[in-house]
Image 1 (cartoon, rainbow, N blue to C red):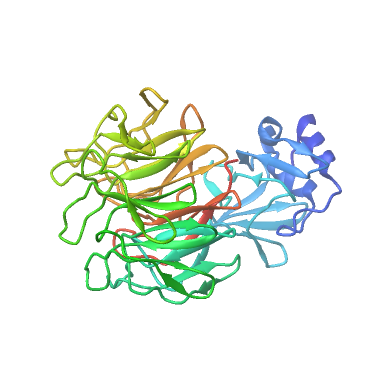
Image 2 (tube, rainbow, N blue to C red; image 1 turned 90 degrees about the vertical axis):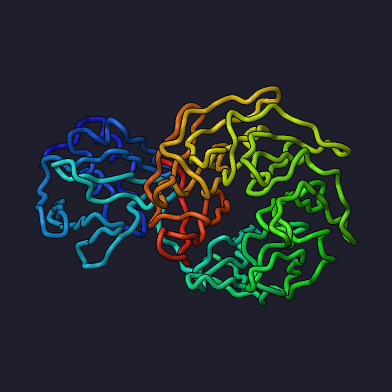
Length: 444
């Protein structure tokens, strides 16, 4: 077996004889020796004896005793054989499996490739985590006390559901049903309690109802001024605001209102009707972007200054079914389809005076999701105009960086950030609704 070069040996020495991570109970020296072929660890790895971290972005098992098998490769290190079959599991010498060959506190190995360059194993940056009680799409998600909650949506049988549940870190826990089924509704967290607003019910009627979960049951609020579907919600100064959406007659509306703790208070109408638009709060003021006005998609954007709506310059093109996120105090918009019904890969942000274009995403997206992690916007899934996508990527400030694909395509799903990691829930995969949920680790 070839000897690692001096730099790789120094990395090994920094960690040895510290035990390996619990998930991979073999010596770090043996594992690193296997990963240091052709100096790959020396070229891309770093080590800290105190933190016990090793990162090898491209680890090639060159020149080691590896054997091609029907299911992948077997690697022999110091007489012990490890099995790599292309999945997220590594077969250990004792017959058990490991899923994350990482040192405590470290990101670990990004991927392992065989001598011919084929992928043997890839760290589960995005991987199946759990399954909700039933499939959901066009549902909503909110984080309450560090736990993700999901509400309503359609299931795989196209039935609209009133169910709600949350993930406690190990299993899904059911809440009482909402007062009625909802999909294409909105959710916001106010004073630590999740509120839901409007949407369509099991009879596909649009509803003006609103309610919140107080920890033991659902409490009804007064109805909004009219039914809403495909509207948006934001919390401003501790009060939930709702904007636009379809009403009970399937007409897009320009109305906006907020709940002051006892009743709904109307705002001035927006400059035009909007549905399938987006909303974000910037410097304590709600902004709305794009949407469909009943006849065409719009590129307009505006914000409410506390007394009136103020127009922004138009975006570079019309957008609906897009996403929005606030990064460093500036609103960013991603994808959607334009006034011609064409899905777009474009992204841009408003710098306070004008829209600034970002590089295009890897492909067009609509009905996707967005989350901000460590100050960087991530996008997940969506429909590209011909098929649902499992792709995910993030913008690092200069370019888009791809993540491994999710376990399956998703659109009309939801995303939430929990403990600094973006989770995705449910959605449609192109043929059916899904009950799966998974999360993304930080980029290596």
